[in-house]
Each structure stands twice: as C-alpha cells, then as structure tokens.
Length: 139
Image 1 (tube, rainbow, N blue to C red):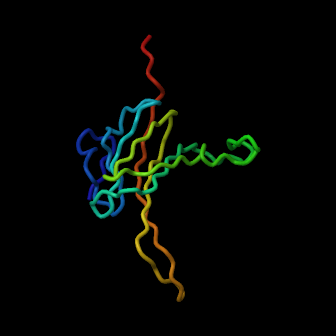
Image 2: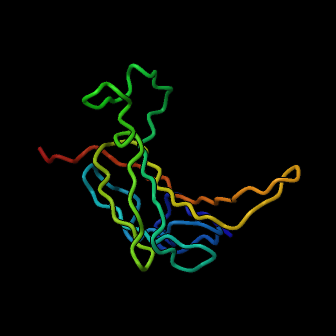
Image 3: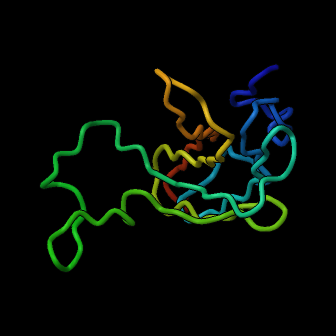
C-alpha cells in the first residue's frame, strides 16, 4: 500500500484501505466553494447509501460558548458536522465552502466484536483530508 501526498500521480486511485474515499475531483488546489466528488469503497467495492460526515478542522479547541448556536441557543450540530449519504454507486458530492483543512469520512457497520463476554457492533471508518485555499482573485 502507498499513500500519495501532494503528488500529481495516483491521486484518483484507491490506496487499498478497507474503508476509503477515492477522489474523483483532484484534491489539490481546491478553492473555497469548489465541489469535491469522491467514491466511498468498502473492501474495494462501492459503498451505497453510506453516511458521510464532513467537518472543517479548526486547529484548536473551541470552547462551548464559541460554537455556533441555533435560534434556541443550543449547539448547532449541523453547522459543525455536515452529513450526507453516498448514492447507489458509492459517490459523494459536497461543496467545501471555507478555506482550511476538511475531513470527509465515511463509516460502515461490519459485524460484531466480543469484549468481556458482551457483543458490540463494529463500525469502520475511512476518510480523506482536503486542504481548501482562499478563493483566488486576480488583480
């Protein structure tokens, strides 16, 4: 297995992880407002109808009183973790609307595991980090 980092070659190929998102849109040189498209795979096969979470990394701990709130004053979770689903062929499309680091991740349930005599569901997750630049404005 290999992981491509800022390489022009292989960015659109699976890296061989059990759960992963393979970019269809080149994940380099993206500006705020660009649309990212990727395909979620589980064991190399398209992952249909899977939950995809998109979060912007803030780079520091955000105190509760600085988190976005809804009209009732409660933490506005949809503004922190954005959620969508893959289509029938495992594709996800999402607009990355702010500059900074973004994590796009997908999860899948994969059976159960036993721990101390109890069974628990196993959830596996894979994702991709994408850096979004400020919009380029030609002067």
